[in-house]
Image (cartoon, rainbow, N blue to C red; front, side):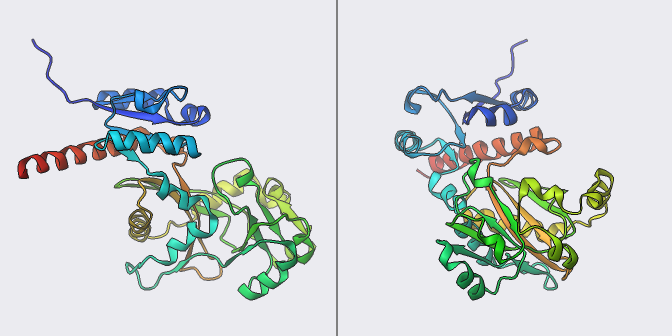
Amino acid sequence: MAEQNVTRYRIGYALEPKKVQSFIQSSLIIHAKNRGIDLVPIDLSKPLIDQGPFHCIIHKLYGPEWREQLEEFSSRNPDVIIVDPLDFIDRLHNRISMLQVVNELKICQQTEILFGIPKQVFVENPASFYECIEAEGLEFPVIAKPLVANGSANSHQMALVFNKEGLKGLNPPIILQEFVNHGGVIYKVYVAGEHVKFVKRKSLPDISEETLGTSENLLSFSQISNLTAQDQSDERVARLIEEAKMPPLSFLTEVANGLKSALKLHLFNFDVIRDSRVGNRYLVIDINYFPGYAKLSSYETILTDFFLDIVQRKQRVNSDDDLSA
């Protein structure tokens, strides 16, 4: 009996070795292959223009050389979908522009929900620390974050600053963001095109007034475990996460769709916290491009569905164009 003709799609991926190891797992390769998707590694030692054919390219690489290769490839292969264009990804590499888009969203799903971002300010030099903090109305503790958020080790070097003395341990340029007690739980929302997945994860513990008065001046995030260590047992943390009530899923979905449209991106996640002082106040504190999807259960299905959505939608558009020609 003759084998049925099945349309197959080639998805090229250009990723750093560490990302390949975490994302391109055998379970994803097999699941995608069974549904007509072939995941093809792009050889970074060769020009992209000499590789293919591809129906779609996914990537998490940066720099002028890669940008030039993508632009040349796209100009010669306009039908190949690039997920995502570097110009759109760039917005997430700056912690100021990253969150500005949140304030531009029109969220009307639930009028009783307060929604936004924490207060934050960009400080260029040490002399302007106090001036910037006072101008923005920030109160201690604050979180210090690098301006650049490009996934590098340096971009993850953050600290919790408890008082003015702690500011002396920082090296601007830097972002200072208000710390909001949020019950030690963070809500992570993963977006892959039309597919949205929600999970709860451990976060920084709440800071009490007592802790604020007796703590060190500054703690790096790697030292956060020093805070109320006794209260942060594995059992207590697990219970906190289990008991934490998810925000309304319709609300998170609306935010996800709003961000997807505003950012013009397909693959990203964003972190949401609930203000412990105001139970219906939710804040987006971070947005990341092409996050660790493999941490999700059934990520293989979500990503394969996304790949099929992308290439089949493009195929339908091309077919409609041919019919109208």
